[in-house]
Length: 218
Image 1 (cartoon, rainbow, N blue to C red):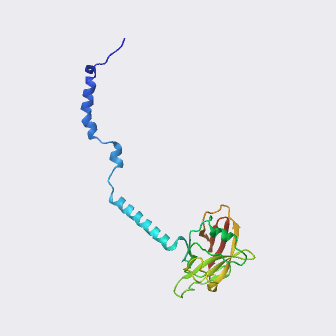
Image 2: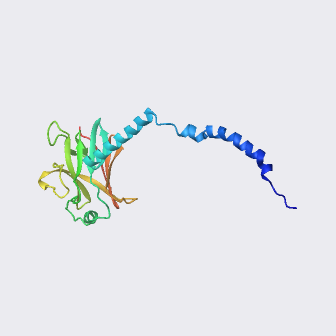
Image 3: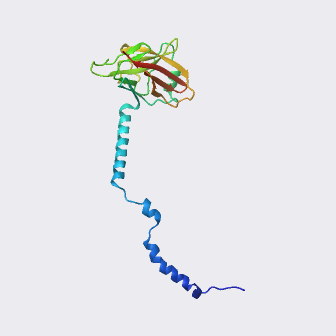
């Protein structure tokens, strides 16, 4: 037998829904109470600090490019370098460098070292104050292929384009330990590694890795 539900039979249910509607409308969802709170002064300050930090980072990159820093004997060292991709003419020129040739950073500014202390690379001293007695040591850095491997040339002209090296301004050369990298890099990467009592300068580019240990000169 077919059963038919009439409007009269549903009347009690309609009454209950109408009676409950005002209560439901007045009570917000739980998520609205806990997660939709207005921004506090503390949150606004945190956001402002984050934006200021981002601006400082953008300015730093505009000024220095890529940057690595370390403290040695309580003094600061800083090295900056350009963005040079492995998939580039620069890298191909680097790999084809001949014996006795010094690589030029043709597509960017020269790699720059700033140091507040004189450095010793296995007895080769890079002196502090080469530009002025009261100013940190500043040098541009240039890889050089030698008959025995690689050296790093420290040039006294620091703020120059990578194609503008003047050999007459070369100060000293320090040996570089060369090896093939376990994980090739997509672009030129430079960093300082801590190694008591000094540190290690690590340069990685594509399949190549270069290491140079140093410490504060006496």
